[in-house]
Image (cartoon, rainbow, N blue to C red; front, side, top):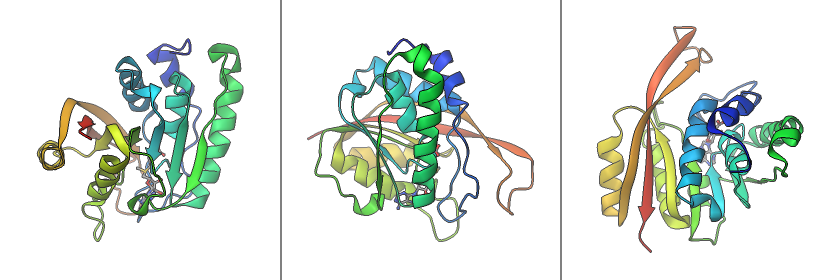
Length: 216
Ligand SMILES: C[S@@+](CC[C@H](N)C(=O)[O-])C[C@H]1O[C@@H](n2cnc3c(N)ncnc32)[C@H](O)[C@@H]1O
């Protein structure tokens, strides 16, 4: 695992910068470092980082950077927002500087601009990691469904983060698409106030994370 414990990984990921000017339509929230460390640590234990790892809606690059730090050889981050990709590149460079002395390996991610719902990948056996838009905004309902559909097309295994109460939806989607939910856990998802409709300085959601194995 590239020499990093889960706790060290979470601490390292704290240096990933949040969106400077987050888009409400694109639901740009930073995946919490603790959650990114938990998810990628599990993926490593499952042997899922031996495949190409694709982070759908990479945003700040948090999950892609975490996967690379934990030992994934080939990592791709895709996002529709060019500014987010520029931030992800800067974050990867900054994390690479602070990890040189701990991880002793190169942090390399390919960043691709594109719409996840019309993905450019010809691959079918990747590992997907993704914190899609939750689809909580008006006009954006089921945004996470489109991400799951892409995960199903490109991945053998996917790890996706959803909002609370998604278990039934995710399990039924997986069952309809020859997928098997092998792991499910809840995780705290703190969100600092960023949009006009946020009333509290900080709100903590209970996110739900699912590992799905997709059949051929
Ligand atoms: C919850 S946020 C990002 C989470 C990311 N793991 C992070 O920590 O920064 C969702 C991301 O999906 C991107 N996104 C939304 N719709 C998209 C689409 N159709 N295609 C590609 N990216 C999209 C947004 O720009 C945003 O960066």
